Length: 188
Image (tube, rainbow, N blue to C red; front, side, top):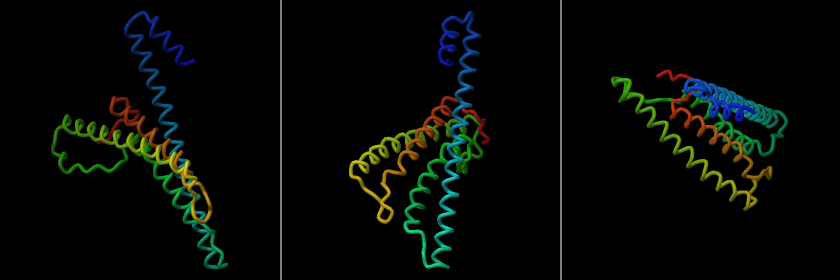
């Protein structure tokens, strides 16, 4: 529905200004949607870390007081922490919360700093896309091999779908930031 109305307005708009306003409105809605999806995704990552914390606490208590830990707790920790770490990446990029080392650029002008930022975003995008490509191939290989964890017998590719979705979201955020369409203004 939104796409149809935007296309209609762009084709039949009376003047250039109305077409630009439609594009800006469309971009702002897409950015708002992406921001919301990224935030929900990061919250799910936080929930996974809470789950890992609970499993670890129950396992330690069980091991200490009842000589009965949760079997495979380290497998759960390994898989869920890997997923959570990747799930936080798009949120951190969207809100400009990555660590920057600006010792070489702190006395530079705004133009140079912005150029370095765009270059860094581009390099990060290339890295995210390479990871997305290679990890998707790795997930397919693990699925074909039917590899499972040692104790719980969980499929090893279990963690890959959320990681791949995270890398896709990260790539979308980076593309928008490189285009100058970031939903949040940068602080630096």
